[in-house]
Length: 257
Image: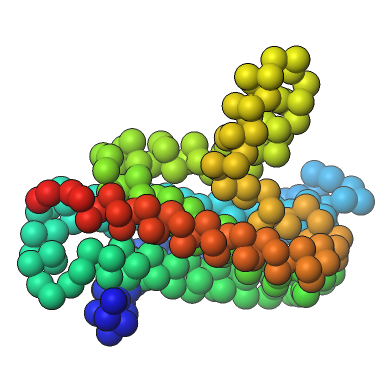
């Protein structure tokens, strides 16, 4: 794998995403936070600060998810539909370099988007004199980025062998089920049927456990898991990303254009 070619693909994805005006989402986020800071104190008494903190982190996560799904599913699928993939694979560019470059490029876009929204989030909270635990907030945003990077790999995987619509639906499905994967195990434990228990455990093993990477609920109180747990969860996400990208490359390598 040639690192130079991977970086060129990543840069192309990055600037193409910027030209798609996704950074307008930053303006929308700033508007949302300003409205929340003005309206929520009028609607609730005593808990308004926590609600604003929760809303801000949830908005960062959801806006990042929208970018991940709608751009990630089309990164390769769009090249196939427009037949530009013929030009790419005809060049001295391996299919693995294309997949990895696409993933790195969109991950870089998400990193910039999350960083900008986090800065705006902190500034608005500071100007509104709302206390926020900056350390736990920053760690939470980092894990939101890791979660979205994992979903980017999933989106690219589905985009390689399905239509854009199906890839979008499948990726949203993985996001929802990944956040509920531990509940599936509990649901299986409640059943007396061994087959259902095995099915639920199998789904838990196969699906990404995205709840590992969701720290939002505790972050607003300044709480975080231990460093050992954070490192373990980071390693889990990294291995899952590598596995999904490997599967994507294997499938893409067998496609005929």
